[in-house]
Length: 224
Image 1 (cartoon, rainbow, N blue to C red):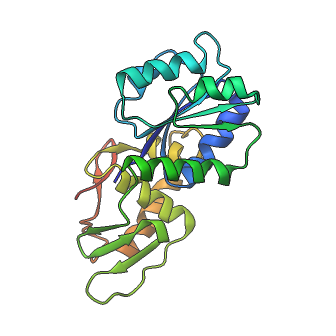
Image 2 (tube, rainbow, N blue to C red; image 1 turned 45 degrees about the vertical axis):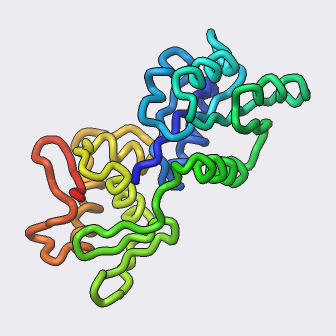
């Protein structure tokens, strides 16, 4: 169920804002500030978003290397350059080209189109134990009764992030940084409180959880 995006952008203000928005939309984001290591970081990703103007290797060079290594990986180029020559150069290997500034909704729409075209879009529904999750509709139901289980925005983001990494053990730091978009501070109980409330809503017996598993000393996991 996981959809992971590689995002290469050297401008920290833009990169932070775009990464946070994409995570709000339930994508896992690997953000790099240069093209160095992009080929390695793209392993397991379903789409790459590349800024053209990068320090060292430019976005065109990075994109060409990614396409050679992962021929089926959709690539979306971002650039403040508006000349037709730049667009044509990018579209020699990339699947789409978006000029800056852009609205977050437009970027999200372009991503969805490329994911659908490549067949990498997340499935619409998922059955976990006694739950049916319709992620695109932000809807969770009890499988037998069909009753809707209402979550807050943050609760749904946490649960969706765990589902996108189904079966994987995720650290508290990973979850917090993906959902809140900022560094986890050791000792912060915010995530733990949200997990407790999630269990009260999702588990048949919150005292003996079967969906959100605690991995002592590390973090949490949702088993398939």
